[in-house]
Image 1 (cartoon, rainbow, N blue to C red):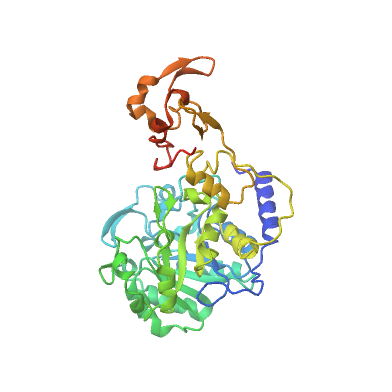
Image 2: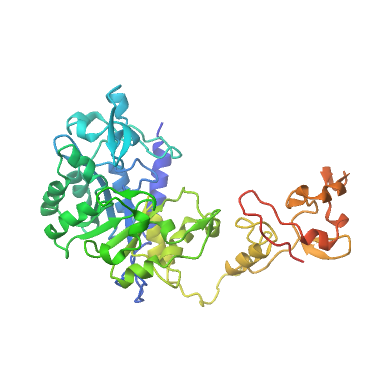
Length: 461
């Protein structure tokens, strides 16, 4: 059951935080294509808390984000050609439709994949009147499932009119699917554009963007080509998105920007960031803006971000080398704060507080404790004091390790040194391989072990 008091306190907290957020550029140039601050795109509103595309999700996004936030609507068409905002072509993934129309699922080809579920093409908008939204991400709270009605684009624009500064972003994910069902997405989008100001239209289908390019005002509406997984195929050209990534000049002929998964820009290996690609600079060179997708505060982040989603946004917008032109987020308050409050800070500013920051085995939340990479990360994070739990080897070499027992933190169990395991109850219960029973040469040949790392860090002495 929803707890009104808890919800009110959460909303109040968000509003207080957002009151300090503004799109203040402080007179400095951003490394975006135009030099303007990056765009915050609210993915289905504040979908990190409320069901995607619900009234409250959109309302909270408008209240807690930068003033010019872009409101994202995934457009689906009903049987009677009403445009609604729903995150998936299969309504069963974001609504409770299966309980309203039990045993009415259908199976269709969606971009060549046989998909079973409930589809808007089989229902009029009146049919969907009693269908309520639900949280489509299973790891998120279902507290608000069944509360909110499906919204039309007209409903969303009326809500946006209260702010005057927010912009509308329409995402057309399955034009080909709707054409197969005799529904004209192009005509619908053009009709909407005549009634309200649509600032952005995105699609992963080149054919759709090419078809509407001559019919939209480029000064009012930006067309954005959306990249999916590199191995997926654009249904209108049968080319993979990985191959299209090499054809930015071609993409510029029908779009003013590209929307890519964030891994296209900062790849990861075993949840550690790899060197950034040249995609942003390459796209900027040909005049394409770059928007990054896949941001949410509850996603599994790279260890480099120390479990802080704010750090992730700053990595994309304020890294000193480039800035993406916008971010698509389920939690738009966080990129709003990153842009309005925490970016472009003077790193040479005098430190005013007197709080002493001491590392805990280096940056042990990011890397194995007491390793070279953990200590280097702690230094780059601005720690005042590095700690070193001193252990001693058999031949008298002191070194840093968080435990005297090598079994708990190194790969010693996989070596012949397991023959040195003994029990000393005064130190530790159970069998252990103690550091003072191995020489430094023996110990430095081991690697530190941590379940979420690659096990390739050095023991320091």
